[in-house]
Image: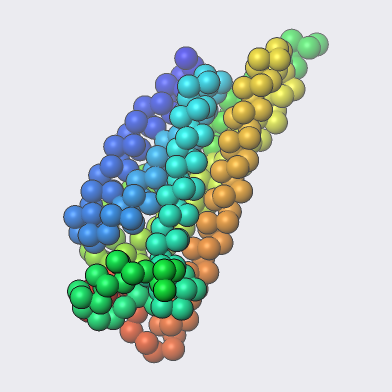
Length: 115
Length: 136
């Protein structure tokens, strides 16, 4: 392993730790797990890119590809969830209900795409 | 002559990859500090969008450097196995670059829309906060 790979490997580990801390901060302070997951995945992508430095083996390549795929799937899932929460189905956050808990729960059980 | 070329390309590959890695590390550290700052100070999910946008830009820039090093490495890849691995790495980086570009564009539109709303005098509220009936 070259010096550059050692440095990037250490940095990747630190960035994963930073991603976990950032995600926890978002969950604790903002209380939005989807946003926290997005933040964590962003940092994991940065770490994965650092692990690709040099001539990585197939396991590292596979891990990075899986992270990227997971990121796409999670992003698509969040977009679909936003669509189901909005009134007009345009996916804008502005369509989120302004009312309180009962209507929110009703929309959770009967999202827009089922109406 | 070939050996000299391989040596020169090898050095160039290391330099370009180091530049890409440095860009990614700086972007990640900057994003981490700003995530913590936004979480502890601003306490609004809309504050995280610009941070993610900036991190995406750093990652895209770092990827450009790494793709450049891949292109350089093709000049001296000796075996078919090396070439296959190189192709896999380049494919992953190209795919990520493409998706990052799309996400950056999407988030940039979101930031511009929020700026327009603020410019029209409507108080900026976070969607999650609106659901909870709370103003930022």
